[in-house]
Length: 336
Image (cartoon, rainbow, N blue to C red; front, side, top):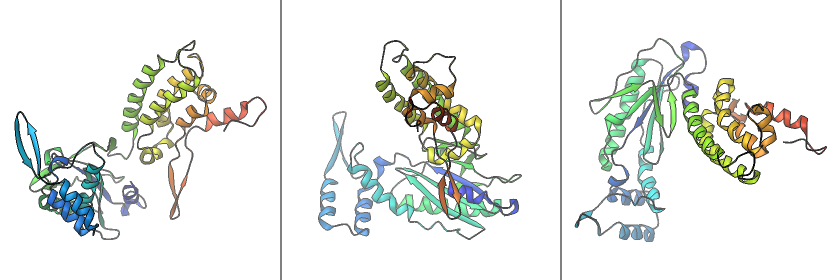
């Protein structure tokens, strides 16, 4: 997101267009060539004994299915510790490919990846520049994939424009002659990326899932009987994990109160149960009374750029904190 923010900042005439292309690798983990993995280990000058051990592991393997067997020479063992490591060793070479187009103030290309999910992030001052540098980067990625024995699924590859500029033409993107569709919104690593640079759609989706979970867990936490406060706090972590996924990316969206209200809805459900309150109690009061563990769910500290570094800025939870400080704890220090 640093690239996206940099492209959309500054004077309007100097702002750049930005596109994110989420690439899809067909049957990725099952088609990783063993020879490519071994070559990557040699290129990284791994110890010879370790390479020999992995070569022994990746040899004389067969797949048995429906009473038949077939010799296999590719794929990494999924669900194992070694599998992702071998994949990362091979995929690291892709991230070292020079995609070109990096001209200060004019255009840039970058790649980001997690597991087999790789995306090309490109910027350009004009549509034609963006189109040229992006297609050039996609071609180089496609070349590497071919050499590595992997296949790009263009039909499942998606792109989205992330820019603050207005009145622009969408670039024509293609991979090996097949057009890449540019959509208004795509999902990458379970994050909803929208062309207007807002994360409202992602917050609504995450809050919806968290709300469903919160309502299910609330049945275990009636006001009278059921799970106690300690167990209730433990159950709230389930909702917290659903809400805060990817929070370093979308935290800046919480400067808008409407987005804060979205993520407070599922928190309110469990806050009422943990504090054993009734529905007429306000969200701020329920969050303050419930416990520090519940109130912390409502605190996300988005990062804002200060000079050349970053600092944290509290965007939500302030009202709850002030109420807690005013109430205190029986004459002891204020709640924090």
